[in-house]
Length: 130
Image (tube, rainbow, N blue to C red; front, side, top):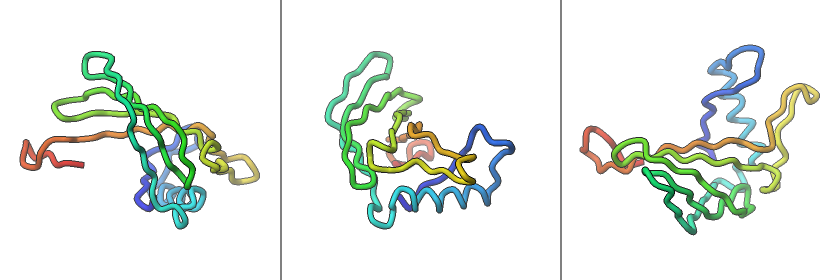
């Protein structure tokens, strides 16, 4: 959880600065209890292909010490490359969504998660395993 990166924020009055992103990441680690629960873990249980390199992976996400079912929508984005997306409901993992400035700033309970995976072997077009 210590490697979380804030890529974007929506709905604000102005774009996020680099400083905003750093402060949000620090706050997120506190809200997620990263000190007590340094890892988030997804264990896949099943894969159901739906054609054309797409499918649904179902499994269990453990976040902040709480394990809950999660489904990932997966699609192929290139040779050996995939994109997965899911929606994580913070309160289902015992996480109270962040609020600040007397409630003027808040994070939705449902957070969208996007994952890009490159399974190419090292040396294949400069790609690396991640």
